[in-house]
Image 1 (tube, one colour):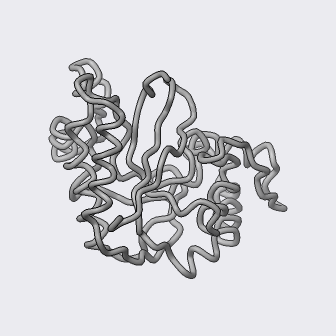
Image 2 (image 1 turned 120 degrees about the horizontal axis):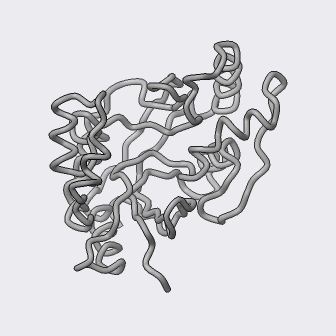
Length: 235
């Protein structure tokens, strides 16, 4: 079996749960079953436009990033990475509830926490720290490529240290619902928000239970990410 191109630590709701099904159907792909799904239909958004607006997050699958995708260190194996995921989850005893709200985050639509969560921040930081040794260090050219002009000095510092700028106190938990809306008409944005408010009403009402970390891989460059294994806290 070939070694995947990249690995990632995501939060993903339990398979076949309402939270998993709602997000996977919205994106049109189940990252665990590796199947395409029929997307919901909305009166004011054509199926073709909706498919286009969700194309980018469809590649990654329904998730929230805890440790951004990374290539595996050449000195380590997927079996060792799996053991690290298992240990990370085992050492996280208590699950916690996360209320959600719908926002336009940057230039895309997402579900984010509706209030600060110290438990979430601590767990995300642990994911970054405890899995960092498994990541192949970025080359100088790749580091330069990722150093965007809009990053703050602190984000550039974090990029250099952790290979990703949005970690530690810069971390923002989000479940992505769309690709870039930068050049989308305002009315389409509003229609998409209305559709999301309706479709994700159960999650906006009940929130999420953060009770696990899920190992995802991208088997080949530019390919779809897939669910490998979900590790529940305390097990």
